[in-house]
Length: 292
Length: 326
Image (cartoon, rainbow over all chains, first blue to last red):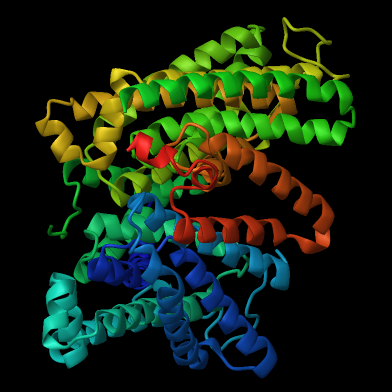
């Protein structure tokens, strides 16, 4: 193991980590807003990847161009999911904990079933996009271009989100609702609208990630499952509800994964992530940057 | 109030006895092996869900990683039998005990986590178990282990020709899981668990040892699930990590209880009786071309139940019971 291979894998781990952060941030945003974990988050990613794939297959739109479209579509989808399902789930009086987990879980199962039914369980891929398969060499280190762009998009998205939450009226409404959903009604903010927009925004962010992932990842109905677990780990590691935590958690997860892959056989690379996650939550149940 | 509860419990016991007696006769008339197969699976999932319900329903610690215990049960029995010739009966007991110990070992750090945090930790732990078995060459790694057929006998718990013995074992397992739940419901533990579920802080302040009661629930639940896993391994006579410890196993354990009524005595039974035949039938009718229909059906059921009847379907049958258990 030379220094070069180590730097090489840490660099790609960092890029992947930023993407993990982008996948996870929607989850963190929604959780922070209303204390709900979206157990269909991975399936949101899955449909975003399919959307990007079909835009490519039918209209020859490159995933990079499709990304904003996919994000917009997911925004609508996320808001609809809130209005049709989550809005009622959070009102549950009996077995509230169970309802919150299983209503979105049921949605995840349905989405997976629908994907299998209409798209078949076959693996699909975007065959010749602008960036697919290309690498760039920086000082002797080879970096895959799709991941590089993905990392750039992730950083831009985090920057944008930071600006959005801190500098816009809607962002302030979001913050206020998250602090006290009851009190905001008194100043004329419609709680439901803020929540719906929050779900839309969270879904749009994972949509953005899905479009980029479609460049270099196989697309199949269960693809969301493995990324969803990584997203939960990322969010729990960073601290549920903390947007910055998702960013930092993503980077940690990417680096840990790359390091584990250097030491253990490739099929065990996720074990490192899970072990680090368990270690962190056992020592600090609210995650690294969580406050509660 | 108190006598009402006692009356209900006695009635529950009588109803359960009658249902078990009826169930025991059914396969003597229904000889179709496809139907018998569905009945065995239904009873097994009922038993598993009933066991899951002890920790996740009564005690309120929703675990989505019970596939781990199912897998440990299956692997313990199978490895002991194929590698050392130990009879499956001992494997069953051993697997159950190992699982109970592991459940408490894992509970020690995990029970400090609450709600979603706990659920996610259980998923992750089960996933680690799956990955480890995937890479454990001695235990067959990803290829899994085939259990050699050594003839029909109760001693070796193998029956090549008839499904009846499996049916009766599954029935016994379901009865045991039900009875354990019934018995615990009115024990000190049962009251503690419901208190912990409703409000852990209040329970703690009233002298309930929250941590220990969670540990107890985890151990009982894991033991029974592992016995179910041992049974399943014998029933299908081939195990591999994905089919035994995959996430879908954890989910399948939870769904009957959620559908029928989480934290209720009859919920898991009712849920399994509806869910398992429905999935098996949609799967075989929809065939290969309609893959995914079964997922849509039970995903839809879960959403509908969560939103419309979070108390589960049992609440439709006995509207008055709700007050009694509160």
